[in-house]
Length: 103
Length: 156
Image 1 (cartoon, rainbow over the protein chains, first blue to last red):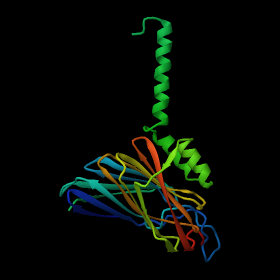
Image 2 (spheres, each protein chain N blue to C red):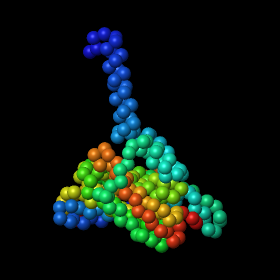
Image 3 (spheres, rainbow over the protein chains, first blue to last red):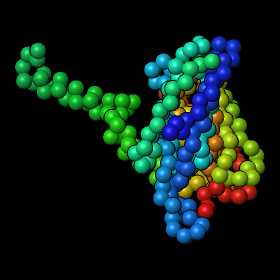
Image 4 (tube, chains in turn green, yellow):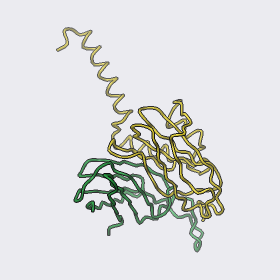
C-alpha cells in the first residue's frame, strides 16, 4: 500500500515538492495506554528524493520527527512531466517507493 | 609501474590514505551509513551530539539562516519548522532539539539543484532551543530559536 503522497507545484521556474508519509514514527519510549507496555521503536531512518532518477535529497532522521511526517523542498527547475521518486526505509527494514509526475 | 619496492610502498600508502578518506567522507558505504545513524540518533546531550558529528569544527552564528518556528507550540508532538538560508551552495541542513532525549532530529543532504529550503514537522519533549546547522561551502553556520512547549511530545 502506498504510504506516500506527493504534491508538486511549479512556481516561477522552481518546483515545490511536498511529501506526506503515513508512518507511526514511534521512538520506543512511549507506553501503550491499555497494556502499559513500551511500544517498540518504529521510525523512518532514511528518506530519498529523486528527480528524473537523479538523487536530489538524502535525509537521515530519528524518532523525533512527528508522526505521519511531512516534508517540503524547493527544486530549482523541473518541468511538467518530470518524474519525482520518493523512497523511505524504516527501523524495521520496511521500505516504500512512490513515483509522481510534476504537474 | 613503480620503479622499485620503496616507491611502490610509498604509493600504496598514499592510495590507502585516500581510501580511508573516501570511506570516512562523503562516499560512506551503506554499512557505515547505518552505523552513523545508530550512533548519532542515540540518546545523548546536545553538546555530545554536536561534538560527535562535527568534531571540533567551528559553527558560526549566522543571520543568513531563517528558522521559522512557532513561539509557543501547544502540542510538542507536532511542531512545524521551516529553514531557509541565503548562504551560497548549501548542501546540508541539520536540525537539533536541545532538550530532546535524542537531540539530533533530522539531517537533509541537498544536491546543488535544490534551494536552501526545507520544511518538516518535529517532536519536542519540552520548552527549549531548536538549532539549525547549515553547511555552506564546507563551513558550518547555525541559528537557534526557543520554542515554548505546552504539552510535551515524547510522553505517552
